[in-house]
Image (cartoon, rainbow, N blue to C red):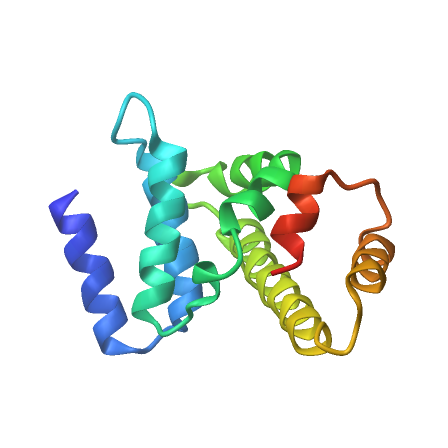
Length: 152
């Protein structure tokens, strides 16, 4: 694990590969190594945040990446399986997992933009109109707790 961490740190420092792609590969390899009996998924999501923060991408401070992954759990496991084929022989294809990972980041930024739009525009809207607008954007029933989370 020490060599693994040192190698990823050196790769980040060299700057030859996009930090987001490096982060995705690092998270995927960590999950594949599976160093702990339990908690590898949670730890991998913390490592995702850490490597993103290190690269100056702080969307995870405002949007739950964990929730985005949880909401797409089936796809997450599908891409893990697809990218795992040949991993032990160093013959795997990282592309399915990297594409999924980048999709999570894009979704997080889209959610942040929506949230900023709500914050920016909420001064112009009365509470009932703001709640109605939020419900229309979600296109699904929302609990009071979900509304509180969506409307700052």
